[in-house]
Length: 358
Picture (cartoon, one colour):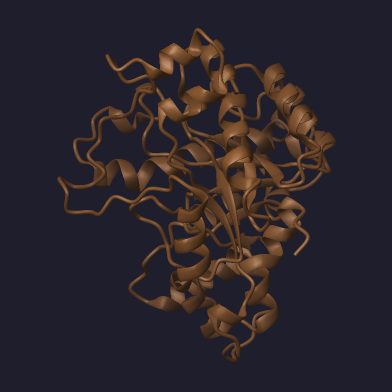
């Protein structure tokens, strides 16, 4: 339960798990881990092998650009400067948005092998999420089986902007079954950078990236969560943990209450459910980044109460330009929550979600 007394520990004295750290892998670097003809595709200087949205994230140079190009980058910034004890890495967010299924499948194993070889094998305190190509759920399942014995691979990473059909569709069941069999969390990651214009609408109508970046991550995660619940994924895979990264937490109470309302009227359209949508959602895990900036800090603390201190995990989203320092969340936790709840948010819930031995 939340307490009104301030915590007695500082950031440096508290175990912290960062659930969302992005690697900055160049096409030519991942090409070393894949076969021809895909290797030549990734090393061709005549075009961009992995298309982007074209939005100006750096605001014409006004926003500093950061990268993670080596395990030392992770250790020096996150572990040493930010006091992160266990960063959870993900190698790429582009796979689910690639139109070429064969390339996506080849890159899936390439990115995962690179992450293991260059990062996880170098630092025992690092963990990783395996990138999945959802275009081929059977191949994604095979990849999870291949990596199931890798101790530092603790989950699977799926960019929720791009997959069609939505990620609760039964065609993905083979992928979720493999994750459940291998005790790997499924982590969905929001994105504002989809180059496929039809999903969601962030590249249609909006002329400013501020609009896109405000809406897109949440849109894709709302659709994913709804699809999972209505298609009964938590009932079909009761031992599988589901986590949601990079959409903040403001959308979660709305989805709980809205789905409850719809389910109370149209239960026949969700026949697999055995309890209310809110009850399933409260078994999911949600990463904190990006932390909202309410004019009244008490509103953020009330939002954390609604989501639940037993469901919230910390994330920086480093090295992206809008990353959160641990203090961005901890200032709210330290002001209201006791040491046990605070430590659960900063590390314990991630340990439960991803099966970490801390």
